[in-house]
Length: 291
Image (cartoon, rainbow, N blue to C red; front, side, top):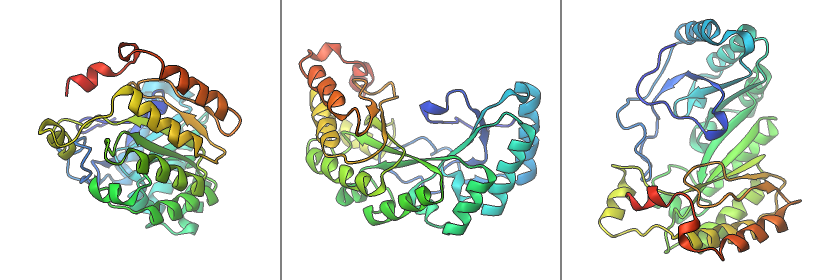
């Protein structure tokens, strides 16, 4: 198996076989991110990927049950090639149950509904999408390259194709300036999409990113734990979805998770309890204070 540079995957893919189908990120302009700056985006050949799958079988055996396609936005591969790779993986790993990938809205949008169904039929089961926020002015500010209208259209396209959708929200991404708008508008967009998963990520800018530079210059202030929880509470109380809310990241100050709508009141009570605790009780403070 061949890997170039650092390879990133969602926490929920911790036990997946990672296949680096693409190198880097085709957008690579987000103001909060510096993960792929050392890479120039390219798509690896089908032959190379099949060879890596074969190597994966030699290393892991036939017991692989989950496969994650890295790097950023492997969804951009030609549909026929991506479907061929996915189908080949199922052939090589007879116990394979799940194939997932990252996919930003602007790149999923390049696929037709028929192409999305083709990928589902080949065995693509889940797409991880960094929605980050449902507030258009903030999407412009962070240079995300998409819009609320596109996020909703694409989210519905994924769901209608029968592919699970995991949407990521960055808590505190709007700082104190847009904390209310960020929460309320993100809830509105998520309600329109009704994704399978909503995953919370507390925002801490990566070193060398545009927002990290603004933070160091005193132009951007990160939300304190209690304020981040207030933002999450406002988001949750305005959600009207049938989704699993997950808080599966080490940067999150508190575990806020559960089935929606069944456990909504339980989640809100947990947030209210956490907000009574002193600051030092929250996890993730070390990373925040090291910036």
